[in-house]
Length: 423
Image (cartoon, rainbow, N blue to C red; front, side):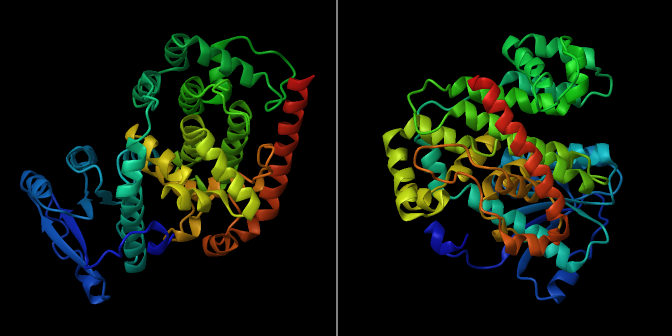
C-alpha cells in the first residue's frame, strides 16, 4: 500500500530510534548502519530509567533493546515500552534464543534481530516494523474503529489460557478445568475433534483427550474465535453471506496456514501457533463491518461486484480503511502477538511488506488465496488474491504444488462438511 492509497502525507525526515543498551554492550552499534547510508537518527542510552523517561517525553518511531544474558530483564523493559508508548515499534536485539524464549519474546516484541544479522536484514526488519505500526495506528483507522458501537471485549478465558501456557507446571487437565468453565467452548472442541476434519474412526467424548489431540495453543485460538462468534451471531440480520460459514472457512484457512508454516517452524515453534491464530481471525473486520454497517456495507459489496474490484480496495474508497486494518486494530487492542496482528492487517497486500523471512503473514496469505471463498449471492471473492510478486520474493514458489494439493484436501473437507449440515 502506498501513501496515495492511505490519503496520508509521506513521512519526512529520518527514522528516530531509541536504542536501550542496559549492559553497555553495543556502544558502537549503528555505526555500520550510518556508513551504509541508513537514514536513521539513533539515540542510545544505557540507563533504563532515563531511557524510559526520554521515551515519555520524545517521539520515537521504534525502540530497540539490546539483550546479552538477562533475557527477562530486557523483555520487561519492552513490556514497559508497550505500556508507555503502545504505538512505537518494539524490537529485541539478542543472541539466538531458545524456542521457549523466542515464543515468549514474540508475545511482546514486533521483531527480533539476532546478533550477526547483516546490515540489510537489520534495515529491512526495522523499517518493516515501523511501516506496520504506522499503518495500524494511522488516524483514519483509529477514528473509524472508534465509531463502532458494540465492540467485543477481550475474552477472559483467553487470558487464563495464556497464563496457563506460560507456566511450566500446567498440564492438560489444568487446561481442561479452565475450558470447562466455558461450556460453549467445550462443546465446540468436542465437535471439532469428531468432525470430518480429523476423520477419526472413533468418537471422542473426553475433553482432556480432545485437548491432547488439538493442542492447547489451538484451543486458545478457538476460545477467541468462539468469543467472536457469540458477539456476531448468524441471526444478526445480515443476509449476504453466512457468518457461520465464514467461521467454518476460517478454521480451514487456519489449519492450512499452520500446515504451510510447519516446515519453516523448526527454529521458531511459535510460527505455527501464529499462523493458526491469524488464519482463524483473518476476517474479523469483515464481521464487524457487516454487523454494524449493514446496508452501507452491502452497497460496498455490490459496487465491488459490479466493478469487479477487490473488496479491500473498495472498502478503502468508501471508508478510508479496510476490514483487514479494522480487524488488526481490534486484535492489537486485545494484546495478541504483533506477528498475528501484522498477518491479519497485510494478508491482502503482503507485497507491501519488507524482508524475505517466512512468517505468519506468508502462511495465511497463501492459505487464504488457495481456498475457495464463501458463497454469496453477489459472487464477490472475499478471499485474498495470490501475490505472485510476493511468492517470488519469499522464495517459496517451489512449495506451491504441495500447498495446492493440501488446499484441495481442505476444499473437499469443506464441501463434505457443508453437505452433512444440509442433509
